[in-house]
Length: 339
Image (cartoon, rainbow, N blue to C red):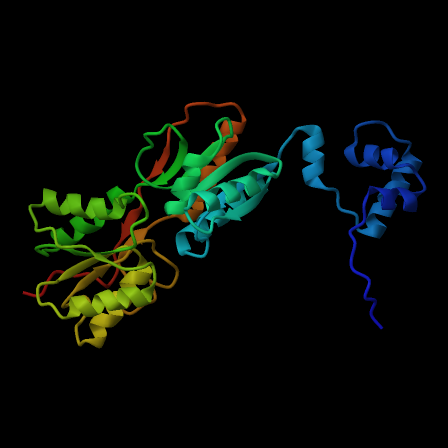
């Protein structure tokens, strides 16, 4: 018969009682701060093992004033980019002997931002990394207190507000994808963008700049969400037109939805319409036709953000933004236009 008694994690007093020593003696053994006789040390260590005692790292960091916790503030964490950026931060932090806490912001209204920031900073935080992929992230980056070491991670090529930043140059990538389609012979390139996020999209601005530099017409932007279903709906609209030969999509999921809608309407990708995605998500290379896309290394973005924060914690100031330009990966979904 199982006991209904709720689980209680062992504390210092439990270890002291099991070892037959005082609480200060247990503390000295665990902290290694002062000499303790070997026989007493062995008794404490045996009690720790027997009870499964786990030291409170947060309390220990407060006492030692050596904070080892990185607070991550993020909006939507389930999307491909944020999820893999988080993975990059967590891996880099673990390798450096630090831990992370993730605070998700439900919305970008002031009350939600203040509540999320208060929760994140209620812990013994060494510094913060803000994922600036949406309105909530943008708002959080502007609302954190002065003096806290902060790094933002997101899209861009520079940072005019002076904040330390790890960036992916989406503008250069959008231009690269569009230039490639123009060089294939397409007179212009249509664009299915993701939702607006409170700032101009580097992907869209790069697309627009490439068309203008090529002297090509700049079509009206279609907006989807970040999912394949909304991409499919935009693809249905595109399939009903005879002036579209190339489409640049805001991410890979949108692109897959667009391609499926085009083929369902009897069009051939890439013979009738070329399609380019963005992100190079897993499995798009196995799609038929395999997707031409922009390879964004989000795990590297997260790692770069953590290493920049480490430099801030070491006392460095006025760090230049760490910027990487994603690269085009050419596969089967693009071709010269039908003549």
